[in-house]
Image 1 (cartoon, rainbow, N blue to C red):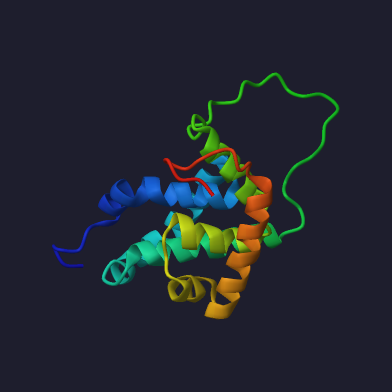
Image 2 (cartoon, rainbow, N blue to C red):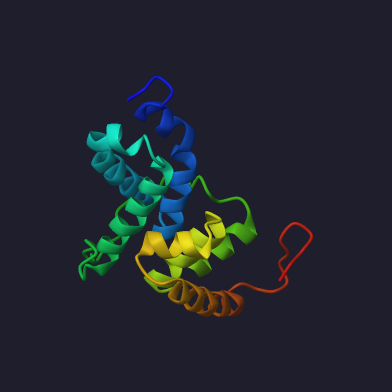
Length: 169
């Protein structure tokens, strides 16, 4: 690794918050998002010398989507029902505060996995159709059709009375 190539720690410090946001949008849960990002970073770290030379953020983003997809393909989610709710106070959600963001995030979480991945990559990560198709391993037409379906669903789930910085739907 050359001196001009940022190290793993510098990359995580600089890009970690954005990658955590991607993970949170994919999982819909702050704790699962942290687990997902940590899992991916643990997988990437041994290969960092090879990954850092190209486009490490794209590589990690693709690893987030692929790892999350492997998690949601599993039938068992690790939850076991109990008769009583434990007396545990949950930590505050670092993402609460903006109503629109919360309602949009809740709506995104209700999308099927493939549509959710397309929305996160296209509209939250601002990737092109071609880049999104490459990350997901599908055609550009699939990305477009999944995005179209997802946007129709989101329009029905997010109230139209809310506006986005002076704009709106």
